[in-house]
Length: 303
Ligand SMILES: [Fe+2]
Image (cartoon, rainbow, N blue to C red; front, side):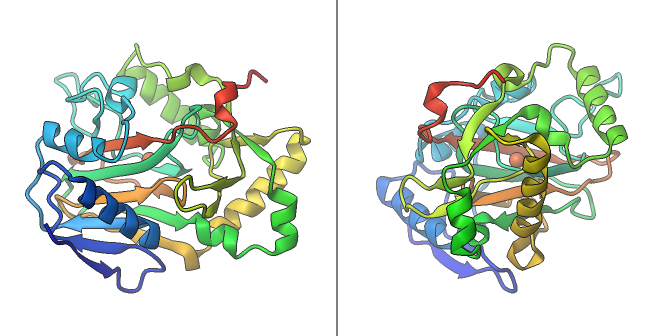
């Protein structure tokens, strides 16, 4: 298998990949090649391949490392424990049958509210609204870190962000947060947040275990900075989020059916635009796990 990689035109980062077949068992060479391209481009849009079955997709993503049981954590309708199936499909009662794929999501890093956050995410468009539906936006937080002054690096290095699933709504309005909560509970009364809503610790300056590259590891799940006055932390986190999501380091992906976007979950944060809830939008999502970041091994914080 030889893959062809082309930089995304007009985007600050990212590349398209052709010739990669996720339906096939990935060899060590393929994994190394994709990882190398990911290290260079941070995000890869895989196109032109045969759509993998659920089992093939699990086998492909699993070639990159241990996978989260995202399907098991979130969705009773997911086809395997590793595949998180996001969909706007409704059952006979008119209730969405899985975690939503059409409501807006604020800037986040997958699973950063767990002790082991995501390392890479594989996100695939299975079915889309006629107009393509909402885009997913990605920000390059390696660039966000590298563009900060040394004095800021010195100030941030060593600080610890407290990530909480409850923090994920902090950039929504109160009404939007309430609506999201109510909808989630209504859809699945057995739903419980992964990690049991317990906040966890991750460094604000997060070093990739392979490349050593440092990312500004902030997103809307960061509720506090350990040891800081909450108001001071809020101010700094807001400033950092504005910096991280500056349009010069953001790429908006307009989905086509079959697109498989592979992204570095340390070096990017992402958010989702809304889509028409009356149309079907279905995605398959899998993530590899970071072993630990040197902080998470101490377990969840309780404060
Ligand atoms: Fe996500």
